[in-house]
Image 1: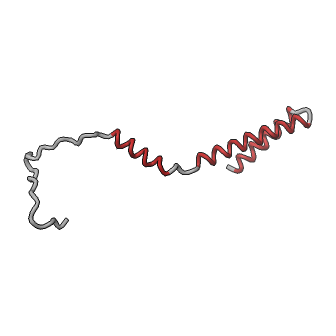
Image 2: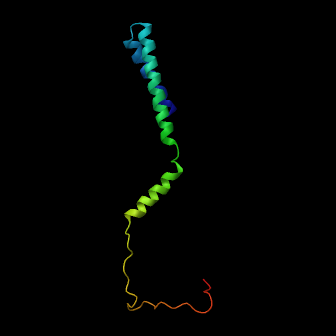
Image 3: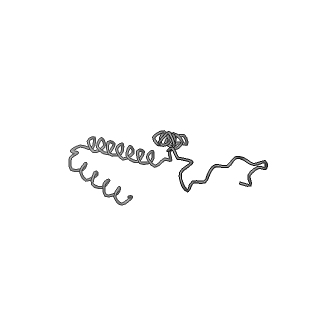
Length: 94
């Protein structure tokens, strides 16, 4: 990425030298290029920041809301399905 930035900067400097006939034009062009580079670097840095803590929670809530709200009805008396048992006198080991 640094090599690409150097090539891009060199190309801009060459183009400015060709089109700027006075030093003021060269300075103005260099200022514009510097502002564009700074804005690009700032945008890349902002994009690389981690997401705020609340956004993952909000995304999980949205995903949960999109899923089916009512569970599928299952026949408890279907063949092969064990019957539910009543709780015993002692607590379960699980």
